[in-house]
Image (tube, rainbow, N blue to C red):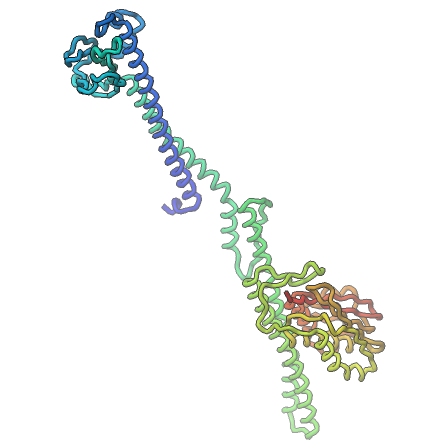
Length: 490
């Protein structure tokens, strides 16, 4: 019973059922057409025989049946029980022939001139054979002399129709059953990938997302379903791996300041100390607390960014997160509620002004080349300020002499490009593919106090604005960050 509930069994039953219904309708049509065709042949024969009998009769006579009784060409008619009755105008039977008789008397109005012939089918009272009767007027010189009725049994026709009916009744269900079996087999072949998908899904868990179907590529619906399933598993696997790595890295990063704070507290409480030592301990705790707060805020920002991206992916469909070129940027159907129209030139000016004092402390010059027009976009002002402060802070931090250049331009109607270039220590080529990864740090020369989240946060903000960040660098010479942002303006 459980097997009958499978999609494969239901497909086979539907196939067999629909074919059986079609065969029933077709059989009814074939049976009716054959019956009508065979009856038409009998009617034509009776009509021809009646016309011949009337034509062979002498003038003034009703009919002559001698030819029918003796001529060899009428042998088949006689074998089929050919019978005849002739009636005069007074309704008196004047001639009869054959095994069948007692035909229904023609109605009185049938004797009126120029009546067309009439057919009827009756059942003989004695033999119970079906008999086809043709009634026609006997006319001589436009004068009605009487009525001729010729008849023949329909046994041969009935036998033929019975044989046809038996063939249809047996053949139809057999064909439907064969179609159902074929449908069951073909459905099994077609649904084999579905079974494999089910078995693979049973093997999948949060601890093991490495299972894949790896079915041969095909363009049908099942092939696309299998490819989509594998793609979904890949995304889930990557997502869980990132989540696990993120959790492990966050735990490791938080453990460091917590361990330092615990060490400071334990060392301070080990014995009485001078007020200056307590002040130093508090200063050290404040520094570690600040570091841990910065780390926690970065983690919360990334977590919110991930949650927002998942929601946007569900509600807006395709949302290209990393633009490789201008044509790659796709505008989402809806913008977050915090997005508002901004003038990027004013925002960059505020960021540069706020970072100028840090640059002055190191004797660095910030060169600012940003037009005041055509730099409008929809975005989150606070997040964009954080993005550019992170990049400028890194540029200042890792540049010992020279200058930092900030430029911006509208690359197209849908894209703004901001470039921040410094003359600092640069980044080794082997590190560039990884610098936007969370908690990734380059060598010790670039590892001044930091959480390793700054560039990851900057990249997530750029992606949330329909763009991305790219970097070019040569160690000991320069580093250039290029930020592409979608204008999101219609």
